[in-house]
Length: 342
Image 1: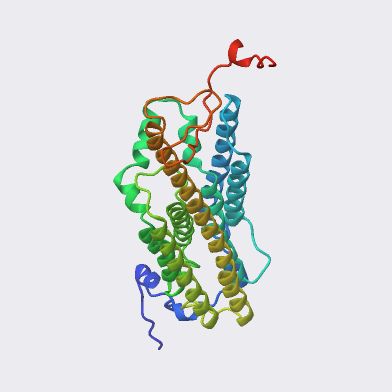
Image 2: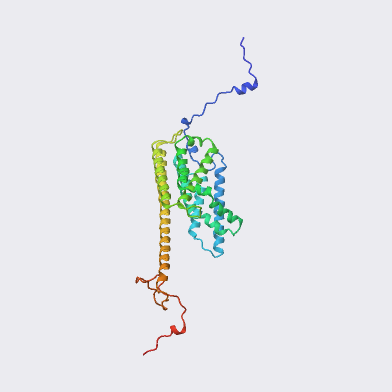
């Protein structure tokens, strides 16, 4: 007679077929899993970022129109730059890329973390906000926040560079990249960090908007150079080996590494151009101030108490002419009548 073991219902449920433990070294990504756009896995953070970018783009256009309506000047090129940056964020969050899974992911992260932040920062949104807001509590609070110590510390170029490129090394050289394929919250947080760190680093290097402390140009240039080197080394390491816990086709892996390598170089060259332009404008302003100061110091010594006549140049004791070559004295009937013939 066959004896059957009686298992209580609760124990029978608990003693179901054992589940195989997840091993990150066997997480081979399919093309559907590789495309990391907004609605994969029913995520909510990526669509929220896209909607926020759309709203901010509309608010920027309204603020710029209001500024021009009251007679102030706001370059239209900045509006075009902000619109392009916002559209890039929206596309990176929602639009798929017709390419391999890892190449598509790398293209989206390159746009989200480097290209879009540069376009947004060039539009100077903080300056526009401060010029649009009327004098009051809101404007003073925003200006105090921009000049606060925490914001000054976050915009310290080496710290911003560490948060930017350090996050990329943590993503691609650890099992974090494999984990974000299976956990939607991690996936969303990675996207948010890439965008925030890219904006912070670009803002810290360019420093086009008013901040509490303007760091020197050599420090910002050194931080940009260090990020470029770290970015290049990371791209070369991905060309040789995929992120831990993943497996991509060799062609897809190499193409994604090249996108990261050459695309990152293009954006970094653009950042260097902005930095060089800032340096050129700064040295020009310094030179003009020095010339004005030197001219102001020479004027009291020019005539030893006597002012030059109308239409004559102010001559210094050394024989050089002042920048103020003529005096703008009002023309009278006496000095405007031509001399009588002899």
